[in-house]
Length: 334
Ligand code: TYM
Image (cartoon, rainbow, N blue to C red; front, side, top):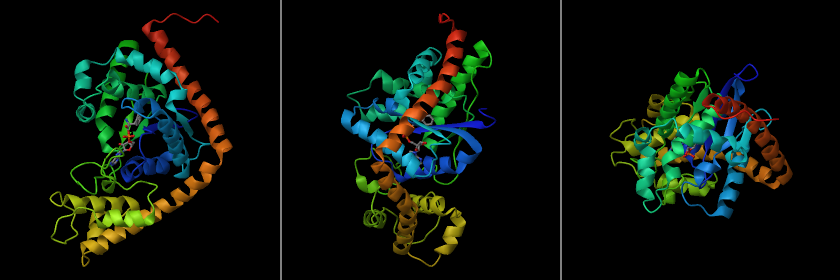
């Protein structure tokens, strides 16, 4: 609890440009939950360097992501929106938690296995211990709720296991966080390969809708989306392409799959794809406009970065000092 409210924490990597899955699986839910919680939304730039990055690009993307959080509707006065690399407590707690996490646990992480296969020439220790840094992010803020897409569920389970292990040795140090995985939009798939999740790092740009895509591009990508050939709009696992389009439409409109099936009972795929594209364009337009305006206001974004970085460090240090004391680090002399 913080100021009488439960704590919500989440973050995104500042690699690539956000895609529709990031928005529907995470960001949109953050906005819906922000009123009821004390929220921390992090640009997790320290996670990003587990894969090689161009330094100038990474800096630019981190700022764009922070601006996009605000453009999407998060209130930076009420919530703490900050860069992970500006709060050293993340790295410090991560080191301590490394000593309470087993190799076997990290070996089981499916995202590690996927990334190691994809970046076989750079399987660095950071890629392996990445879930521990994520656990540190969450536990530093005594978080109650973590809204994420379903691909992060395993990392959340590890976070809970490590926190429970630590608490069982030292008493109630960490709040045990609950994941929040919304029904609609928790796993948006690639438009080109609907068996694969939509991803910022997909080399096939036609598989992803990026939040900054213009209307023509969005229409073109949806028109080309891979589907089956029976022309029936039905929500079923054996129709992964159409199922994914129904999921996108459902998350954008808050309609259920059966309502959508009924609405398009007499339509073909062409009409349905256009309808999905229109909803997505309508949903993204205001975000794109606000992003363009905010990006011009350097001083305002700078002030958010400074103030919120300090605020995050204040809360994070409170937990860190407690943990350092518990594990036996010497008291500071003041
Ligand atoms: P990242 O940057 O890969 O993704 C950010 C958020 O978007 C969700 N997401 C999706 N949801 C639905 N469909 C998709 N295709 C899709 N792709 C991505 C992710 O589940 C995530 O919620 N490790 C995290 C970042 C992180 C974090 C944290 C999150 C670091 N520390 C602490 C929560 C709390 C990651 O790489 O997310």
